[in-house]
Length: 346
Image (tube, rainbow, N blue to C red; front, side, top):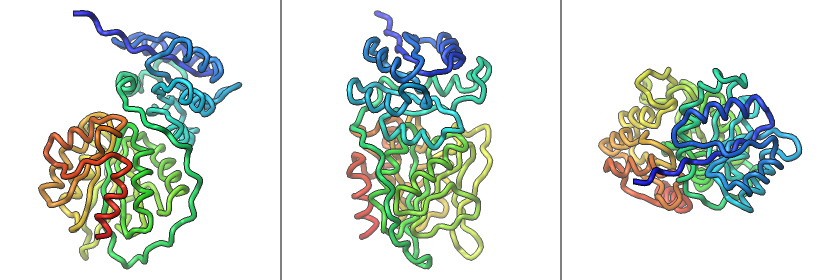
């Protein structure tokens, strides 16, 4: 049997220490091969067009040509999966890069040494191996900030929407939310993302949409016009308080949790208390997180919908929920939000 060709990787970063650390890390990963290293976006674009790598790791802040210009030109000339390696200090910039066509991101360690990069080795290798098999879609520039829609009155009962996503999730989540603006809904999102990046994600959505979006905190109420993003590195659950009101609670992650936040943890907790008319969505993402929780929701009478394979950047999570028998409707992303809005308005 002919051995499978290794996945080729181009590293684009202006830090020589980072290029060395990434190269050394990837040299130990079976099935991956570093075929080039570039010192800035200009050098990176030239080498990307010449070497045609399967996947690229990209820094955003670089001289001559930064990561954003690199992404615009690369996606126009030779669309290639890109994984952004970004520091916590530039976390708000990551979502601009995702809108411009980046596949995913990895939080850059605080130090550019071998030991620090070893902490993200597993995550980076997993995403590099998945990137060549992603489904590409046309990317549109980030939407300009929209004027806030009038908030529904707080006393109006909110229709609850639960969303789970991972790789490729931020743009998909935003697209769904855009279709729900103006409806008396409360949306709770579990998006796989490191700590501190979830706050930047929430802030970006808050600036772009007619919702009040924030990173979730214990005690946050389920009110219309609100969107809550589960904090990275922790778990978000739904509970019923004294008096019958619903509220969110943030909990520490346990060693049994494969993800933090976990879609399964959010969905499973919601299955115990979700009011009639609740809907849940499983969007693009690697792995099977959400399948167990989706099944619990189905048994509790909650409709679970999933993104179709045709638009999912990675079909792992939706496929797992579908195979579990938990999903009642499968739609491509551009139809998912409008269909959900129609169902919630009925």
